[in-house]
Length: 147
Image: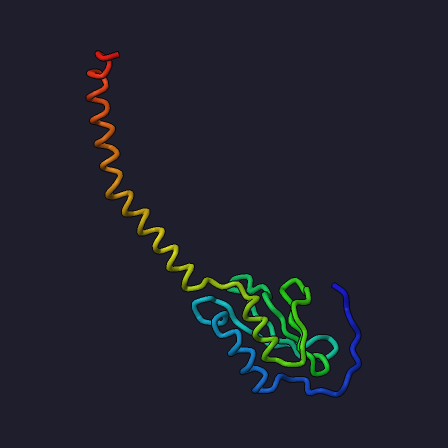
């Protein structure tokens, strides 16, 4: 990971309520209680504020990090790779939302449909196949006469 030195202007060492609400609203689906994810704030060794999206317990690995350096917002993944950078926090939050892996409702419905179809085939079609096999076993000796 490469480090870029920025000129520092005196900036407050905390996230404002507006900034935090923008990030939390942008990542609302990812931070939902059912996902097990949480968020936390911190600071770099230079005093720049950071917002962390943490994965579920027990590891709580960092999945995303948003840093504010001299009025620029830097979005990085959990490995420290730069994903997006801009002065507009709403754009950064939008990119963060698109980056977070999540199970969509469409995927959940597709999996449920697949399980229902598989269960139906198992319950309804399998007996036909077994009966067909029994009929085949009964008629094979009669078919041998014609050979």
